[in-house]
Length: 186
Length: 246
Image 1: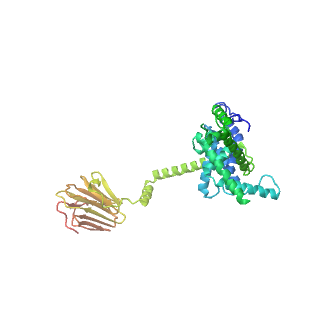
Image 2: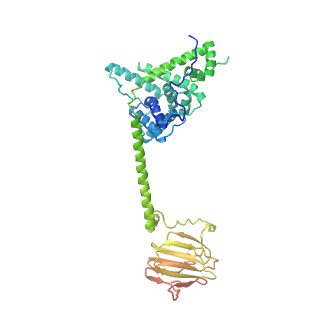
């Protein structure tokens, strides 16, 4: 194994310093940078494309109505989306929607066999995710959506220093759960 | 040799530690077979998990900033409409309360009885006292009983009939009392006060008792009492000896 060379993960594009960008410009930039990621995270979390779309839009609506950028806009958006999701679950009492098994048609139109295989694999992944605690699932999904440890700590409500340890446990638990699911289906 | 925690190694794999800490960790891992194994395992699992999670993805819907701003505007308008409706209701309520105060009194009376029910457990010291010009009043909806606990060494009761719809009792000195639905009980033992009682002429039935003895009774238009009536039409009941009952 070659020796490691450490390079910290730096943001691909630094936002302009505070005060140099109007709220509207900042909002447009943030929307362009983060809407897809927020949707993808919520879709992975809920398994419901329509709900994920609605929650992601509503989180941005709330930010626009706020009229000022919070300290960490990305963490703020995810936290608002989590709160909206909780409200939605309370309101509709649609139990089991979170991390529920759900099949959705893919964007393209693969052959029926490929479609079946894709859906089967997605179902196994969702089943494995469903075995994790909500916090473990959030940690895993947030990290694989590219959020920094500081953002994850702010969103999930843990100390930044404990994010690594929690991620190790969540990763191991997910990998083991997926292996069990995969073995059972073979 | 102290090894870094798995959490620290995960942060190294995720490139989520500062440059200085990262360099230290990296130096350790490069010289430690065991930690290099952990780092390799974590990196592989990260790749596996990342790939698996992509299986869940569907393309993000095409949304524009303009659609978000329009949605925010619609919500703001809706909130303003709700606020305007609430404000209109408030204006109507204040207006009606100003122009028809009796309307609200009726509403309050309908929601809550005009006097709290007597519990019988209240200590005498906690009871309110009748003091001039304090007036005790109860609505004369049906029957009203006014009970004086005892005769007094001095004082009298003056009873008048009028157009007011309420029964009112006022006293020339402090006297504890309790009010329940259709009844006023005065604990006048040892008092020297005199009392004015105004009764509605339209009251169905009113009974005044002193020490348990009826001294005045009104049954619709009929008055039954041995009390004297002065030139102003007031019934005068002496409390020092108690008028004979009706």
